[in-house]
Image (tube, rainbow, N blue to C red; front, side, top):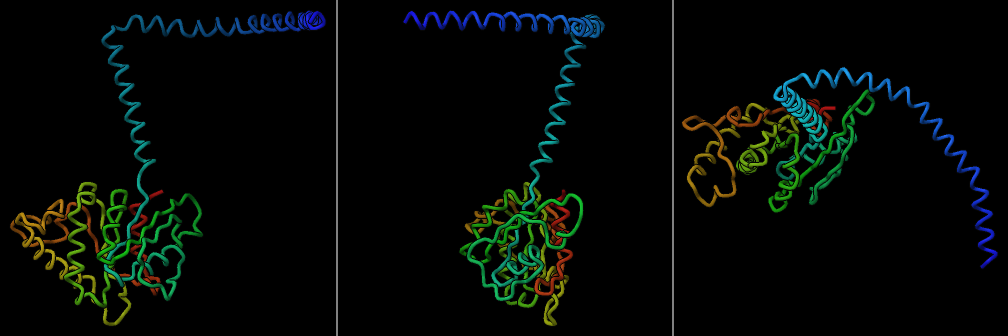
Length: 288
């Protein structure tokens, strides 16, 4: 025990020069900072004098304006940062959504794809932009199955959607006109779509086929069918409960121009890779 005490005393003696040296260095640093301290005080003195002459009410008002401006700028930056990059592909089964998904992603139609039973989902730069230079924002693309039993999955993605591509089979349109119109009506009356005014692109797919209907024909038929649905669901009934909003202008025949969100219609061909207008729609609503 005595030996440990002696060793401890020797250690304290050895540390004493280091202690004095550190103390001297701190004193030197303090002396070096003294001129800077005086300089800062000289700079601040006029500002303090000026502020003391301002009436308290004006000073408080200036502080409030500064705080509001800061919060406003912060909210703008936050909004830009959180803007959605999600595009939802939907429509009836067999309309060509999955082919369109792969063409947008890989530039190939992946011949032999079957009807999807689960959403195809991925975040990527569009294939047509893969060789472009500069800042390009990746797109979060979701291909939602069109089977009636699987459509509730659509509600999982609509709240964060920046845009909706509703795919229609332009060849088999007439036999499916009623089903297409009902599905489109349900989307256009959803609160998540109407409140956020999510833009909708009606993509008339397979337009390269000789028997394909034109986009104008499809638009007119859809408007007629939706007008029938609007009339039948105008009264409070079980059929209306599932819809959050009504469509159209009272006393006028329905037109897509009456929708609260922008609805446009284009022709495309997934298999032929003729999807420029779809890509344009995506890029308009998912910006860098």
